[in-house]
Structures are given as structure tokens and as C-alpha cells.
Length: 383
Image 1 (cartoon, rainbow, N blue to C red):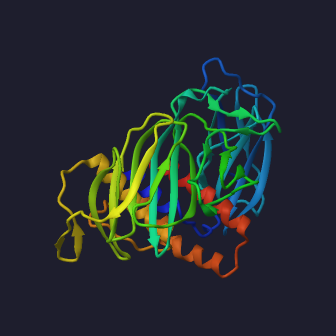
Image 2 (image 1 turned 135 degrees about the vertical axis):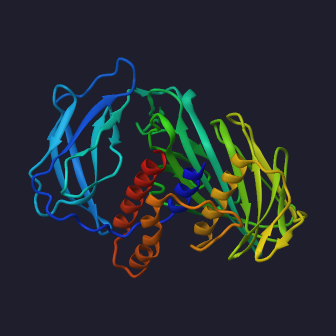
Image 3 (image 1 turned 120 degrees about the vertical axis):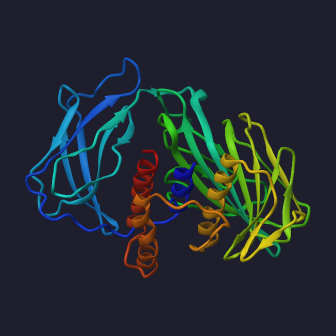
């Protein structure tokens, strides 16, 4: 769970461009395309691309074709090559990528790609983690929803085809009265189709845990005692809810209070729920906060029975809340140390955010960089 913890911490931020490798001549990038679906085929002769990423932008692109044995090889790089890269192939209308890798110029690098046959059967789709970050403020409340979506099958779920030919996978219906819909990444008419009343994702869901993430937020009018109900047409393994308030809490069927968290932006209340079946509602009502708080030194915690899985999930949610509200320094009372390999990513957060805020990066480069980073961290933390 520590890997999931730190993946979600940095999933909301960007990495400034990594240093270009020096002297990449004489090295090669090789790889193998494998089909993870039993009896699946290999698209021999199809193009495979390699694309470098540096300084917040995609840079050099190279193309080759897939050999009869499913292998590919890139060599003879120009002076514009070096640094972080991914390899890519389009199969049955779905994009597949290697884990992000770095070309250092010191040795050949392997960047394999796994592909899968498509399916329109959604039975393998599961929401591994579902996070709600709730920030009441006066007569409004901002709710961010973050989903880590997996697929337990051996085929990529490509969704159902709409009348206009667009295929959609998971659909979301914000509560009535929602406004100011915001997507952390490509939004409506880009990745998603629909409107604020109901929208659906067009991104296919390949096999694996946390294969796809969905991240959006909206605003609601707030009144004491208001009730919010959320329903998703996929089973949910774990739910974490964080309320950025010392005064306001939540109550609802299946909702388990987990105590208060001390943060540099104030006290936050934490809750857990799940598992939930597909279509089973998660409902909560805003109530006065009643959880007792025990203060020890500078930390704020509440007394509760230890549960490592639940605590790790809530730790993830607590750190992600920091990004939702706009802070980068949130510190729950007990945070496991990050994997050593993740430290460079953490140290680079502020620099890239500043570059984007200063107008040094286009929004397109910013979003592309975010996607690249998320893939890198996922690959790192799944090891």
C-alpha cells in the first residue's frame, strides 16, 4: 500500500523536464510486443513509435516496424534524442505504451509493450480505489472525485458504441445542482463526452490494477444537513472520504468514521466505506463534527483500532487532498517514507508548477507531461 500512497501523492503534480542524456550514439532501444490475451495476435509490420520527453515537452519521434517475431529496435539516434521516452503501438484502435524509461547513452535499453484483444464485456472492470475530497466553504462545497480503475480480465474493455460511433466506458452523473465542472486533464469534448449532468469516459481500460484514473471536481450549494448520493456502474473495492473541516462531518449507511488528521492546512476528518457492488449507492449527509480529537505534541489524531490497509488508503486520500485544495505541504501524523526512487519526482514538483504558472509551458505540454509522469510513477510503484 505504500506504493499506492506515494503514487497518489505525486499523481496530481508534474515533473520539470529531466536532464537530457549526453552521447546517445551507439546505443539502441529494443523491445518485444506481446499479446496478453490467450490466442491473441501480433500486428506484424505495424508501426512502432518511440517518443522522447524533455523540459515539459515531447521532443524527438522515431518510427520503425514490428518484426515477424514481435520485436522492434531503434538505433542511430540524432542529437535531439535522449532522456525519458516511451514506445507505443496502436492495436485494434487502442493505444498501448511501454513503461516510461530513460535513455542514458551508456547501454541499450529494453522497452517492451503489452497489448490485448478488445472486448465489449465490462465484467472485468473494477474501481480499485475511490476517493472523495470535500471542502466546505461558506454556502458552497467543492467535491473532487478521484477513481483508480482496474480490469481483472485479459482483454481491454473498449466500451459500448454510441449513435455517433463514439465508444464510452465508465459514465458519471454528478449530483443535481452541480456546477463549475473541472477535469484534471483532458475534459469534455476531449477525453470525455456529455455534459455536466452526465458524461462518459472514452478511454479504454486495459487489464491490470489502476490501469486508468479519472479525476474531476464540481461545486454544490451547501446547507447543513444536505445529502449527497453517488452511484457508479462498476464494483468498488475501497472508498476513502476526506472532509477539510474541523466543524463539519459526514454520516451515512456503511460510512465508517476513521478519526481526525492533523494537516498544515487545518484539521480534516477521514472516513472509509466499501466494498460496494456495481450500482450500489454511496450516500452521505453533512452533519456537525462529533469525532473526538486527542492532541499529542503538534500532531492531531483520534483513537481508533489499527487497520494497515484502511490507514494506508486514508493516508493516500489525505495527501491527495493537499493537491485538491492547492497546497503541497500537507503532512498527516504518520506518513511512511517515500521510496528512494520517488524522491527526484517530489523534489521537482514546485519547479515545474512554477514554470507553468509563469507561462513558460503551454497547457498542452503541461498536460502531456502530467500523463508521462503518472505513467512513470505507476511503473515505478508497481515494481
